[in-house]
Length: 322
Image 1 (tube, rainbow, N blue to C red):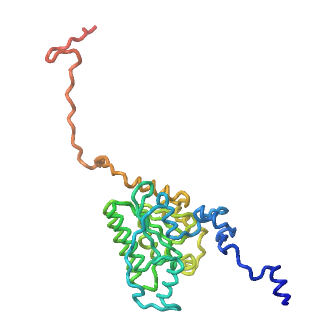
Image 2: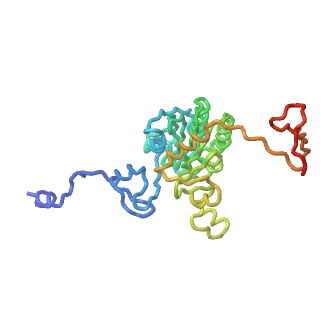
Image 3: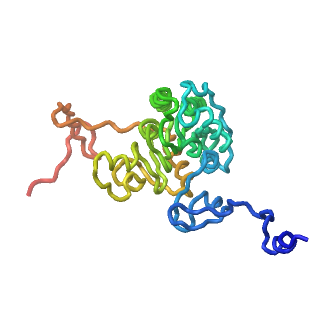
């Protein structure tokens, strides 16, 4: 008889199967508190202890914004993969396979069509968990398709940005997505349709330098990092200490870079209200008054009207002078 096998193992529980998964608790990056996963999902990944807004997937963002979480996914074009045959520590194709396997998505941008506040809306959302939300030709095609769908459906467009910038593995092809998406969004504005940007953590690089900052209304989530270059790069370049909260949503609101900072629990309601305001018919403004140096036409004074009770053409009796 083996004493170690028959006696010790059953008592200390070695070799037993786990009764619970490893992801039941998640640690908040801001306060360090452990949050139960069910409570975290019910609060849309907002920490109940410090109100820190954790990152959301693109699918969760779409479900958060649309009424009752119902929407129709829009299939986007699929350009050729690895057009430059890029290879670093890993092949670009292998990196794509890993990202697609871990997220279950083909690209870092997902597009849906539905209603927000009862109004037809197209939402394009970036997924930071897919290669840092970087923009390649596939993501650019998705944003262009979202703008075209909004024009076709006569609907507003909401873009939720969460990206580290353009994808270096595609070189100039990824950089070309900056003007392509800008032109597509300009067609949306020419059609008189609202375009609302929601900046989440993080929004940096070429995403900030293009489609993320040209909306009719720019909304940011609390504490979101927003900028072109990161704070560490800026400090190393200018060799100065940056102020507290630099490039955070609240700092940018104070300096006029964003229009409002909205809590995630109030985001859908705020977006619906903005869309309803922008979709109202425009009232013709009143004509402006002439400037002082302009010749103002002289309007003749009206003739004196006869006193009431007097017949036309007959003299009016007056009281005798004392």
